[in-house]
Image 1 (cartoon, rainbow, N blue to C red):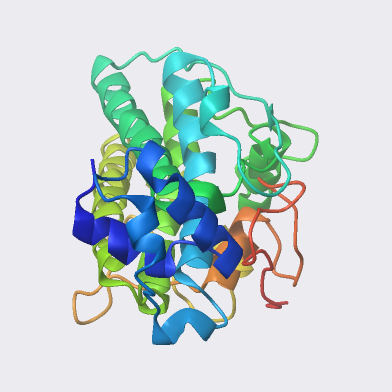
Image 2: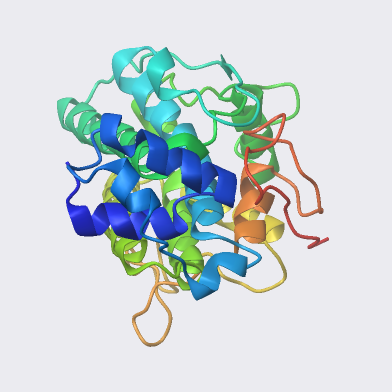
Length: 310
């Protein structure tokens, strides 16, 4: 699956600390990560100047893995009616369960095909990041696919107090639920890119970002075609209220009702979110916290705290 160069590159920045890196090397030969003997690699003395960096590449990739767990659980439940297999959930940190989620009774055959393809991509992202991180990978944290969506819909004004929002109940609900994640995933990967020092990992992250952008384009276009621009706009405004005072998020239409399917700045460049801003959104709070919303017990790994935006 991985060649010699990629294995060596992974060694230098694959884990959260030196102990994890050494464990990664010891298991490389049996983990399908290449044909290079782990004993030879252990003796190579490979080091990097970035090893003392406050935020390691492993920490950044584990942050991304938490988000991929969330997306994979959402799409897997929507399409297949179940979540990740047990073999795809273990690792360091507290392993959590998943609340809520069920198969969507899709009316649109086209939308179900879209969802199935996206589900496959998200499962592949989880598998790839887990393989790349080796023994340093974090466990799937506790995930809420039930009360969190109701709270998000309430904050966006999609439902009234006392009502609930089930993103798995219909085609429209599914698209609105997916919209909460997809734009955030794109901005999260772009924001994290400057934190990654290893070029192999950076290339992989760029590849995942591109896929997430394709997904976001599918979701934004589908919402626009179905006339759900007002509802999606409310979600966009709610996200902006969580991640700070800067107006980052963009709705599906511009002034005058023109389509805005690709959210960019004046230079045609997608915007970024910091890790703390991303956590503000998935924790569903503008406050500085370490848990809440879609992750009731927080995410696993060293990057786990949102920012103070309110």
